[in-house]
Amino acid sequence: METVHVALAGRDYSVWIGPGLIADNARWRARIRGRHVLVVSNTTVAPLYLAALTKGLEGLTWSSYLIDDGETHKTFANVGRVLEALGELGATRDACVIALGGGVVGDLAGFAAACWMRGIDFIQVPTTLLAMVDSSVGGKTGVNLPAGKNLAGAFHQPRAVVADVDVLATLPQREYRAGLAEIVKGAAIGDPAFFAWLETHADALAARDPTILIEAIARKCRYKAGVVARDETEQGERALLNLGHTFGHALETAGNYSEILHGEGVAIGMVLAARLSEKLGMAAADDTQRLTRLLERLGLPTTPSREHAASRLLDLMRLDKKNTAGTLRLILWRGIGHAEIVSGVRDADVLAVLD
Ligand SMILES: NC(=O)c1ccc[n+]([C@@H]2O[C@H](COP(=O)([O-])OP(=O)(O)OC[C@H]3O[C@@H](n4cnc5c(N)ncnc54)[C@H](O)[C@@H]3O)[C@@H](O)[C@H]2O)c1
Ligand SMILES: O=C(O)C(=O)C[C@@H](O)[C@H](O)[C@H](O)COP(=O)(O)O
Ligand SMILES: [Zn+2]
Image 1: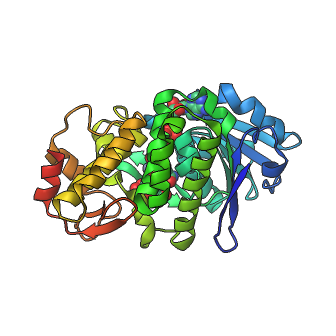
Image 2: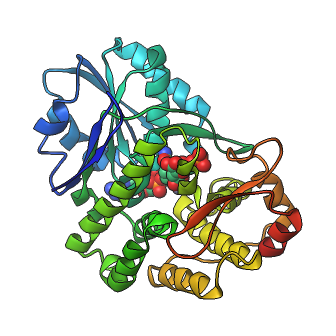
Image 3: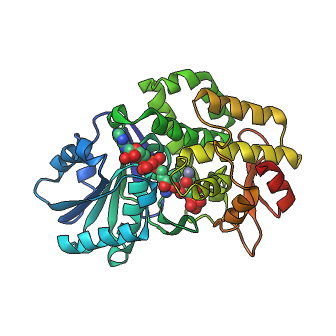
């Protein structure tokens, strides 16, 4: 088992990564302080893993709430339903929410935990690769609105993250690949040695080699944990974790959250950010090519499969949370491992790349 520590004064927590961690419940059960537990999951994951998880809840008062599957269900309405389920459970302030699922369940359940009685504990049990390497770590919780991705939410850190890699056995291939995009992102932002390691091990990763996979998950989580510990609420450096996301989120929203997966949007968005960096003279074409090649080897898309009007995408990008005073702030790069926050990029340059 690998353990990654997220160092946040008084709110430190561990990310445990390895096989058998749901069944081996002593560690995570010890993080539950009170008597009430609400497990939030969805209609696909619960039949597979809810029974194994709830074996660890014997002696507690627990119930579960299942949302329908998919990004379109990451809504305010479902947060309200989770809060009502907490009310029915009689959850007191020492209650704990357990998020059992991918990033959709984790973001939504975490947001509900942040709201119930102004904030109760929650534990992340990520069941997708993407959730293990990204969404379960760092405390960004929230939901989508028709106007844009994650526009409502809160920073609320989990008490623990239980990444049981055995559950990846049932994860569909397209979802697995989407998770790889967020691993590549971490390396592309700030760790050129990790990027080179991913190039060396791309075939093993694509084939789900267990040893390589656990190392990749742990390296990405360690990188993210460091950024989060230095800048929990995104006053500066943390914005770099958004590489590819301004473009990617616009594509997700334009497709009504059902056309492309988040990780696919990130993969395409990173390539667009690399092209824009090239256009602005910040980075070399060789770096764009290396990034594109790695994503392709991992089976990820690097261009949108359907055309959206560039002007519509730019409009969606204007509602991104990184923007200030009406000015677009983008994450671009100087090359592999060197991302930067850039303000004031001209619309014409963004439109040219989107076209
Ligand atoms: N909070 C953050 O920092 C952060 C970071 C990255 C992404 N996100 C968010 O995460 C979401 C994407 O998460 P995701 O990619 O996990 O998508 P997801 O939660 O929709 O899960 C993907 C699919 O896999 C299924 N699934 C999950 N685990 C499974 C398993 N073990 N076996 C079989 N099927 C399984 C789900 O039911 C779903 O159909 C987006 O909403 C994105 O905005 C948040
Ligand atoms: O943890 C972060 O910070 C990230 O930006 C991680 C992203 O991969 C993730 O998709 C996040 O939800 C995006 O956040 P947002 O603030 O752009 O909504
Ligand atoms: Zn993301």
